[in-house]
Image (cartoon, rainbow, N blue to C red; front, top):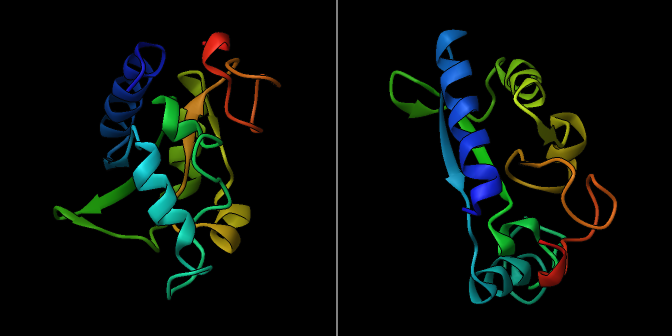
Length: 132
């Protein structure tokens, strides 16, 4: 991950742990080739769409985003009651949280990324390399 977000991600993991929630980062830096593969799902490959970001247009492509999942007894629990709390903790450490309710209609994983980076300082197009 980009240095701007590594510290924030660790702060979130630690804050969640203190709150009694164990989380796992499931997706961090995503190379363009991987983004292309994921973008094809639900379009030219079978399955439900998991992203609307084309290669080069995802915060993941710049190492500025990561997805998480809560763990219960060491296992990922996607329908966890902890999502809202994780989002609140993310905001407290300076991350932007894409709300789960909106997110689950469009994507498979919650997304956290560095606030104040990019063209709008919030959720939107991924930044151009020169903006980092």
